[in-house]
Image (cartoon, rainbow, N blue to C red; front, side, top):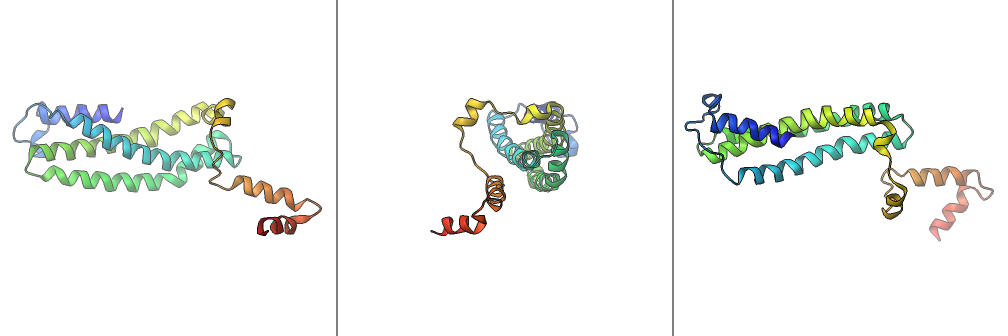
Length: 183
């Protein structure tokens, strides 16, 4: 959605001339052929970074027992500042190319800045959390057959915590577990 929107804005400015004088567009013309390929690659990479920042913290809150809606709020509360900072930095960097004298460089910088703006603030910070909140528990559901195939990556250390809590009540105590680990 963000890439398609940014293509529309690039066409409006660089091909149709809308607000072209504001961005220093001297002559309108067709969009260069490599522009869509380049933009899709760069924006997809940045979008996945933003997605990982936001959704990982939401998933962590859900796994630790928060209701789905509250997990989305908690994850957003802790991760939104990182996404905003990263997006503002990338928008500033790409916007720096708008002042270039070469039309191709100007177009790429403008297109990428608009794409990051749409992707970070509309898609990642508005649409994705809304969809996750609406889906509730279904957003985090994983089919049993796929769960068996995927490795159990316990980044948060939840399995270790459960293991230590369980061994604290065992007759041997947690010291016995430590001896087994150190052996």
